[in-house]
Image (cartoon, rainbow, N blue to C red):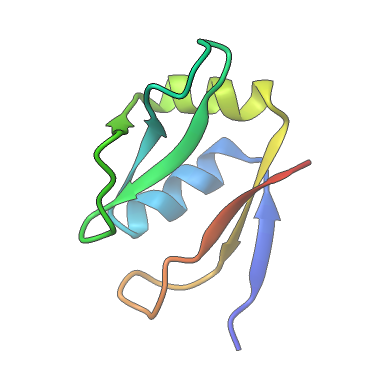
Length: 89
């Protein structure tokens, strides 16, 4: 069984995303400028027209501002599922 972990550590999150060929993103055009829907864009993942890649600095700024945590399955690249979710701290 694979462990599920929760973290707010930026380095740990970025390493996990990089291992799974992902990039920071957000959903654009969601209303007010204060509204940010953070996402991660993975190679071969489901495409979403409104998905916009952003810098890690911008992604982590919103991540911290909205007091989110990153819950993920601790798998190696290539293993089944790059499971993650953003949850309240």
